[in-house]
Length: 127
Image 1 (cartoon, rainbow, N blue to C red):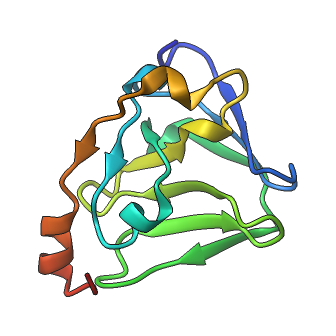
Image 2: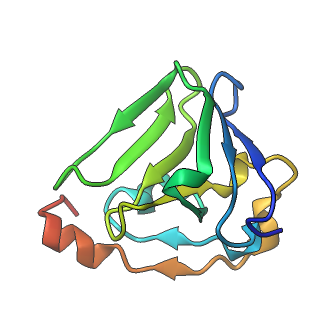
């Protein structure tokens, strides 16, 4: 399924809910190898900035590091990563493919990796 229709994305406890229109099929999920994402290990897919709506988000917590350009959001209750604003292109959000209704991330295996480690060097982030 691509970006033709809105999809529901939730954290584990359901207190954070987003409505997203994917810019690519969920099967295009990939992982990033930057210092933060490789520890998180969640596959994500692209959503253009205007194609995401936070339906319920009072429990969302922001985490930033390095240049503070990228924005990583988590549910403060269950700890699940929901989405992030990309350092490489701040007009694009990455959303956790595992939080999308009806998507099993195993369908994207083996999930390709993108090079975020080089961005760490540019931003001065810890490795």
